[in-house]
Image 1 (cartoon, rainbow, N blue to C red):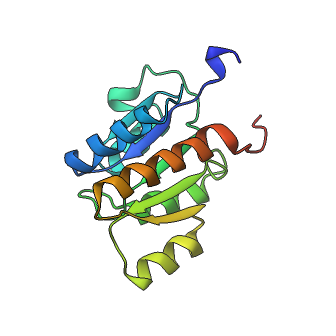
Image 2 (image 1 turned 180 degrees about the vertical axis):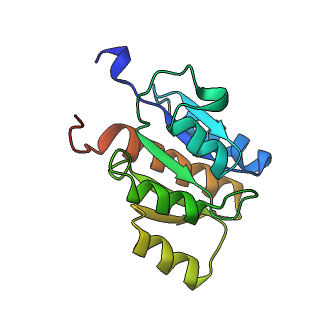
Length: 148
């Protein structure tokens, strides 16, 4: 595999503790994919559209977006809506990784076009295992459609 073919995992998480645990779990999965962490939906869109602090990054879409729902400035459901209405980003896999167990959040996520909805386990070991499994599936095993 060409190293240029290895796409990032974009982690969108406002809780630094949760982000560190997720990055540790992904690291523990021994994935080749680099993980990019941004703290809210505005930063996520800046990353994807290569603007602001990300203006000079290579415009390669991530393998998967791990997206929290409840964040300051712009929440995950608004980000998901924007991704699913933009032809360029509509096929990027988006996994909601949230502590929300609200039925309305779950239903709305599926309606908008989430590829998966994972409730963050309270137990640290379960959290690590869930994130490792997500990373392995979405970054390595899952084959998305070819992009132009």
